[in-house]
Image (cartoon, rainbow, N blue to C red; front, side, top):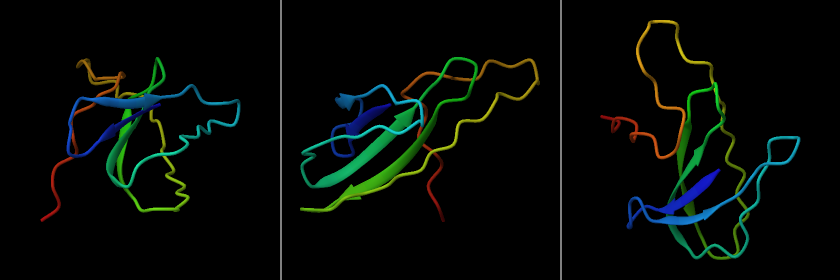
Length: 87
């Protein structure tokens, strides 16, 4: 799992391996906007955005899916392209 600052794209702020339960913890993260990316070989990498405030504890659930069987290449490593902006 990778963590990067929203105001500094592609600058890795930390990475962790998950435990058997799939959870990872990032300690002492400065307040701000972050992007979290999770990856596992054989699955599509997934991302989520989070805003950290002072003293907050966040739980950011992520789900990894198998790639479609459409014959196309699909990224399974971080960083993944950002999801399209909501309108």
